[in-house]
Length: 389
Image 1 (spheres, one colour):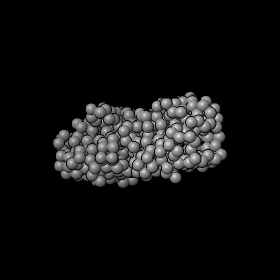
Image 2: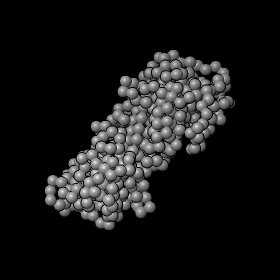
Image 3: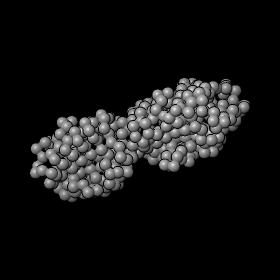
Image 4: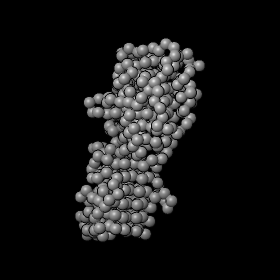
């Protein structure tokens, strides 16, 4: 039987609450640990559990993975200072534990940031982490871009992370800010990380799910970083147990014929200069409920703290805001909290627009908008008025 951390601590996979002031303790090593050479993962390997030791394997470098690696249930892999795993485009990494025999990736020193974490730069569907614990990562960056996190997902990669705990990272839990990757989550607890539970690019706004827990981190929100990428296929923005914050900028764009569906109860806070925009024939379908309205707000609670919602040319009939609150917008060169260009199709019902630094609605490129339907909307403290052109 594994002793110390192998059995007692890992059974925390069934526990969703962790103390943010939890003591950090180095592993007490029992038995003989196998230290892996830095080229060990350049060929296919299977890592097996030795029930008589605390740490099965020790990695002392940033280990490149170019083979197919399989980690069996119950294995503990410890990492020396600044060590890590980098799964290259020719490799894969499959770590499938069980509820009773989870797989542990931990820092040898037992402190946050003592190792880098796991970088996925591979689109192999075998990149699977199930019933794992990943802790003490998020130290120095994996690359010259400065990417940090317990998991870093590179461009055009695939990663499935399920039923796992990501905790005690010095930075973010999951970092995915590069384009065209396929990321699948479910059943995870991401907590007690000094950064955000997730730092994601705009196309991955639909990746967080209500099947995961994201609470209890130093940054309490999922961070959506605007780069040059857009929502270009139908995507659902899910309500989870924390709010979202949009940063970078300037435009979180929905393009082509994509529909961005925003679930009731989503709360999104936008940094200065940021906005949400539907272009081409795309649509923003944001329909909350009386009990779970959708909130678009500014990171700072001041008039004009962010841009607003912009509907540009789109005649998509699914553009709808219902039981939505839009507040503190009208900044960043926006003439309205809800800005329209070229008479877009838009229905706004049972909603509230308040504290805009400019107008509530602004219509540009034409006189009036016959394609705008407004029903039961409350206007409060919008400096430029309710409707402007």
